[in-house]
Image (tube, rainbow, N blue to C red; front, side):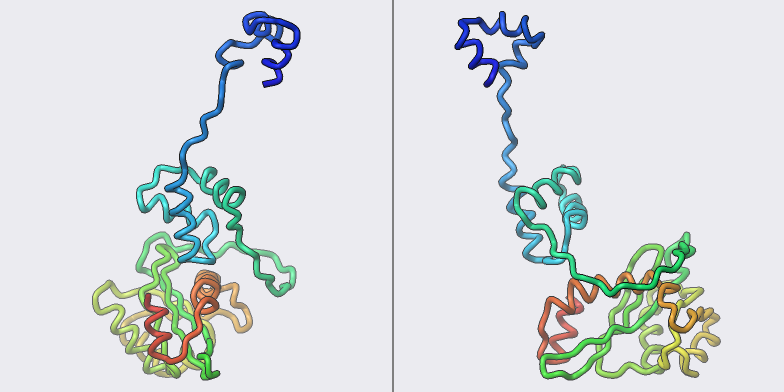
Length: 239
């Protein structure tokens, strides 16, 4: 536009302006034609409304699974700049500065699983527990058991149900809670030839894979729903 205004002001032709500025005539005449992203923007807003704690990277993965041919840079531009859907970061507690050591990651799925408990409350204040379980290799979560009380014997029955239709695991990573350190799970592991690997007390970083999942589970599910009954909590968490 500036080159065209100067040409009109001084009575110069476009060819003369191109020679003076060493520009191609197509470059001088170029007008940008932004693509029509209305359908993409609509779908991004729908996903953001359904999953309010999803950021641009996870929305990009969801779009690719649905067949959208779009790269991550465009999703981030539409998500953060144009639509203004950037997430508000929730402040975390400060932790002591300790050297970070990479955990050994299993090379094959189904060989090792990690388990832990997540606690929450109903609207009336009644506490309930969620037994979470994940495969550090494939990131699969075969079960999230929800109940008011889950003891060691109940954990054994859950494991029997999970591994009824899949190959038996080799190692189970656990903390030192009474449900895991009791005699019931120890007897189950000895009967099935499963190695129980207990982390050091007060060192949840040694079971970081399940801790990472629990953080996302609390942020995207438990903190986003108010449940009145235990049955409602089971349905919401299962969904």
